[in-house]
Amino acid sequence: MKFCWSTLRVKNLEESIKFYSDIVGLEVVNRFKGGPDTEIAFLGAGETKIELICSGSGDVSVGDDISWGFEVESLDKSLALVREKGIKVEGGPVQPNPHVRFFFVKDPNGMKIQLVENIA
Image (cartoon, rainbow, N blue to C red; front, side, top):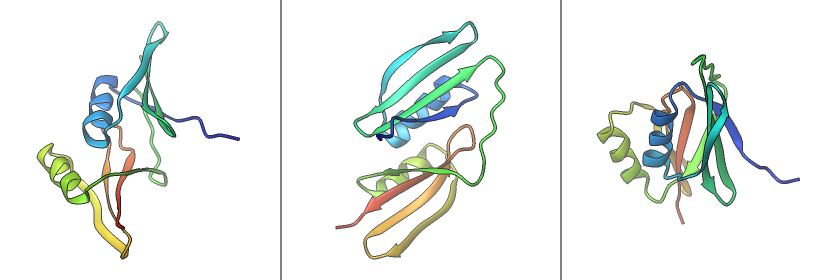
């Protein structure tokens, strides 16, 4: 079995693409209409792929018990970037052991995103 992607329903596709492109560094690899009131975008490459679906209803419900983690090269640079963009840090930075540091933010839909630096 191979994991394909994770899907998130979003309120505003442009805003969500901007977040995942600017903050996480994922590029749009495919974007298309999924029906009269639905647009779908796939972001990422290799093993990291997400699907964003925006439908006409605009209703989105993201649970508090799920998060997506993305590895970054520098946690300090990522922290500066989210602060520069006016994104609230929801938790951290935390360094639970000498090999990893992370913090949490929320995407425009309320999805908890963990930005992680693995320390050699």
